[in-house]
Image (tube, rainbow, N blue to C red; front, side):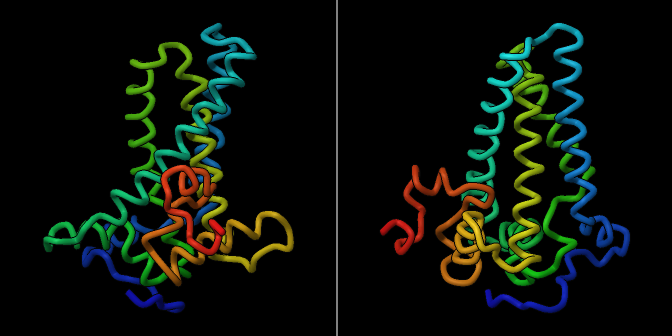
Amino acid sequence: MKPNHKGRAQIFENPVLERLTRTHIALPISIFILISAGLIYYGLTYGFIDVLEAIGFFFLGWLIFSLIEYSAHRFVFHMDTDTPMKARIQYTFHGNHHEYPKDKERLAMPPIVSVLIASFFFFTFKLIFGPFVFGVVAGLLFGYAMYLFVHYAVHAYAPPKNFLKTLWIHHSIHHYKDPEVAYGVSSPLWDYILGTMPKRQQR
């Protein structure tokens, strides 16, 4: 699919649904940073976690998010499109972004969808981590907010002249050279671990 630097894909014919697919990046970033801070505050205030637990499980949640980000990008957003339905799902969730990578209003899921997914993760991780869920999910949602920030910055701005330039190069390789490598956006960690680093960067 050849990238188009101008224009925007039409995903739904219904104008209401079509409008819901677009969002200003500041909205979800603000929402999830506030929820993340609120979870830490609630957990500490009501004695579910102490300060050290909050810090430790926050970073664990951030690490878990990085794996979720990589896995979703590689195995869901780049699924095999061997049926018309799968092709439609893939294009709706991610293919349109590869076709129009400069569309700044489609660099994040609609907030209502991402809040529902975040709620699912909270109740799932509560079964696994018990009261430590307040730290874990806070880290996970903060990781998502940072992912959104990095993803937007990579597509909207020129590469900076510092160590963050690596992220610009990494994601540009995924978009413009080889979509089957460089799945990590906010971090190349899992590309290193799972063998999907671009060959030039591996050398």
